Length: 178
Image (tube, rainbow, N blue to C red; front, side):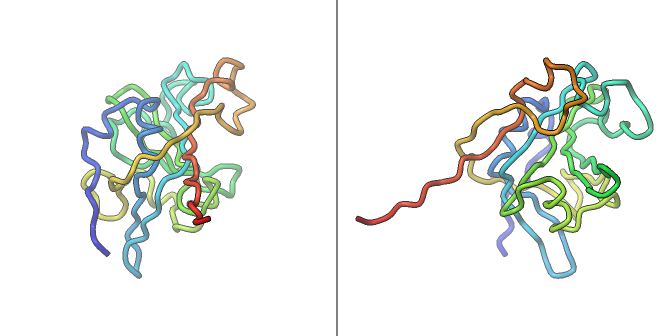
C-alpha cells in the first residue's frame, strides 16, 4: 500500500468547527498486525468549547476531559453507554477544549460501528496523530458535503442541539452510459 501524505500539526491547529468538514475525505489510518487499515472519513461532528452544552468539557476541566484541553493532534477515545468506543480528533489551541467526533468512515455509518470494525478502543486514547505510528490521518479528496444538526445530544440546550455542526459527505452519483 502506498503511504499518502500525513496531516501535519498545522492541520490540527484549526478549531473544531473549521476542522470537522475538512476531515471529510481524509483517511483514518490504523496500524494493525495485518498492515494498515485505511478508511475515508465520511461523517464528523464538531464539539467546541465549554459553552457548547453537548461538549464533554461544558462543565469544566476534569480527569476524563483533560485531553480536550490539549493542543490539537491527538485522539480522544471514550466509552459511550458502557458499550461503544467513540473516537474524536482533538484540535485547536491548548486550553480551549474542542474535538471532532468521527461518526463514519468507509462503509461504517456510526461512530460505534466504526471503532468496533477498526479495533479502536480506550488503549488508543491520547495517541499522537501527528507523529505517532499507531494511528494517523492522511490527506484525501475533499467531497461535497451537507451540514446538519448533531445527533444524540438531547441533553444539550436547544441552541446547541440545533446548530449545524454535523458534516456528512455526499455520496458520488454513479455515471451510467445510456
